[in-house]
Length: 466
Image 1 (cartoon, rainbow, N blue to C red):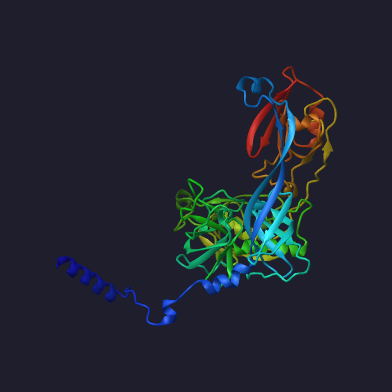
Image 2: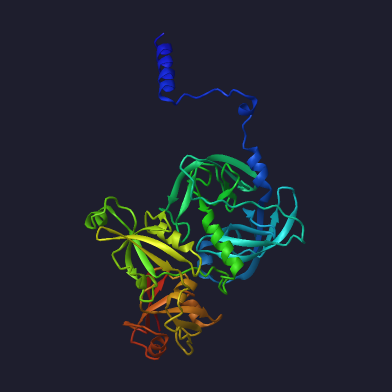
């Protein structure tokens, strides 16, 4: 009796507070379904199958620990074919499709399959590793292809219903549903911008590159990663917002692509950091929000606008900036030549300025030199570091001094020592500021040999050669 009373009381309380659930009253309400949205978007979702040839040395002693160590590096080359799968989305009538870069990276052959069973070859027209997005051109022989509509993710709210469509584990096209769990997730290291939509719609391996769809049938993101301990879905998935997809589509159509097939993104020369509680307190900010300008490049167009080191950027084109990752995302989605409105705080005062996005300047001159001679860098081409070089070779937090390895000639000594993108910071204990200084320094070997200080992948290491 007591349990019945409590149950009745709970129902009464819910109804009084306005949260009572209602029983479906009509046939239409009973049969509510996601199927109209699926029918609208699913035809444009493609399964992607890739093949690549992998070479490795095979030794007859590879299964013997002792002999494998003694004959390390010896053997005969063997090639084998590796396959991979993923998902993509056709975004225009010409057969242009978007997917994740990691889905097609290194592929020698790409085949796409539509939901109706048709299969076509495809080729990569743009691979933007910075955003982990790539564009494919489907060779359909003028056959009509379905395509999906991109929708802005700016008006999303946590709790909104969404569906994910993909090819998990290669089982075939699969639809899952969920909600928006969080927006502007930036505490990840998935791509260079770290700005994602989080959802609990089930996403598994093979879903990468598939669409995250709103209840209006628009694609609001591209599913790209999951948080998982065993490779399966734990209800924590991440999607790249549609705004970044629009950016690479615009870049491809306007020819804003480098020789390497990457996007030539706008450059503003701003280095920013998150506003911590301590920083907010020292700057008399009410909340720890925004992006603090920690450094400005001497060639930055921001200098002419009046922005200074120590300013806190709070919004870009009316979109609130919560941290440094969101600032990088907002600036990366600005088109070249476009002027944006930047809101910022300085000494407690709210200010606004306009900032024009420019191409990364290729100055000072690269002054590229190819190293020759009997030295550990024989065959390496070295260049000065400037903004264009930083962007082209993806140099993160590159030092103001030093030279970068821009090319390596096969079968030369440098192949064993450096990689393209490595920065030579010092030679024989002396900092180097130009390719000429490296070339001259290699002529003089110390008693220990050549001592080269490198920055590779953001980490410093020192190598010695005789």
